Image 1 (cartoon, rainbow, N blue to C red):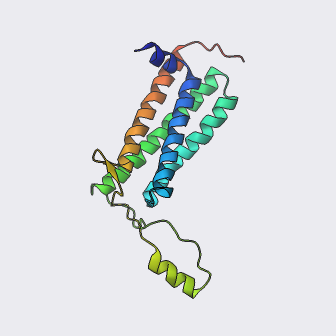
Image 2 (image 1 turned 90 degrees about the horizontal axis):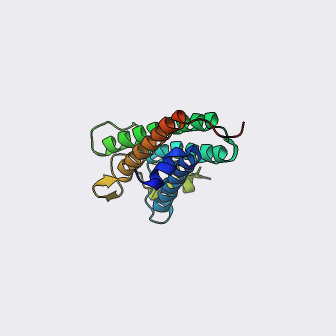
Image 3 (image 1 turned 90 degrees about the vertical axis):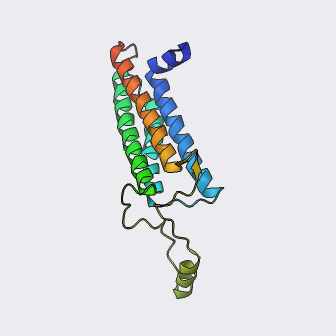
Length: 176
């Protein structure tokens, strides 16, 4: 292992920051695809964001407050669980896109704002594009965004687990 990688894995705070920044980048990418490239997310796409939002919040709090090794280990455990959840959601959504799993019955798009009247409702019905969970809006190297989320989350899960292993083997030198 290189010196940089071993130093990174040896410091739980750096790993917590890395996982938080990676989740922030994934959420930023999702919003870029949605707002700039106009790829509307389906229900499963939106669900895949939930673990990353939780990671961003947790890592922010942990970097501010988690000074003891014991608390940093607890944060890494929660991050590993969140990344396992994210990996599972990504695998499930990819499987729905490939026809391996059945998607949810209500996977037809994001809800539109409430119509003010019948005319507004008719206009919404005519202009709203339903987003299916079974169709990948975009692929890179054969993988959809759900597939890339699954792979990235799996990598972040591995990083959290390696950090846990290393942090639990080293003595706590943090202030009490």
